[in-house]
Image (cartoon, rainbow, N blue to C red; front, side, top):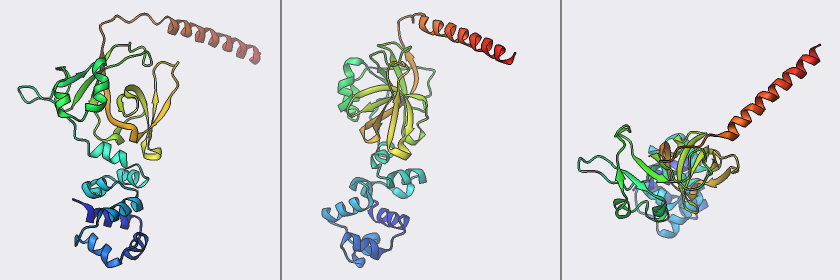
Length: 266
């Protein structure tokens, strides 16, 4: 338990004295001093007051060693984005291993996607998923494969299996890279991410298909994130005729612009 260390750390980071915090919490300074020194523990009502005062969940105040977090993570926590801290640091991943004690790649097909939204943290659920190996991937990282549906990520076709590397620290999410995101409202989505966590506590999700407009989701709507590694599909992709036609149009426009510039220079 890290309660005494955490409340002391948060108080000092705010530049508050024990008298100021005690007054805000409506307790005696000596009582607060006792909590910070590990002499006695607050009841649930007072824990709630500490949580509301610092904007930090009770679980985080009690179970997370805030002193071990990086500075940018503490700043994010202090802005009220506590779910980010829990998502990136308290996440214990349910996984499976083979007979050689090496981690499998679990396969979440389209039929299993709905169940995965509820069972992603349940070892018993993860254990029943089909597994496979991709020998060219690192044995030091954790991977999982998801079957996607729809055309929002074309040219990656509907029904493809996309494999992702588990992201433990969400602050490492790179802008304009593809990720598989498990959301609480929409289940599994595959998108290109714009990382707005530190400033706004959000992710902006972009599709490869330009017909779909970007949208934002709050980070407390996210359960898991996997960095895209590769995809598998048995179908041969069709020629991208629209792209070729667009290229011709752009080339023609460039010629027209050059002709206009030549006339203007005469």
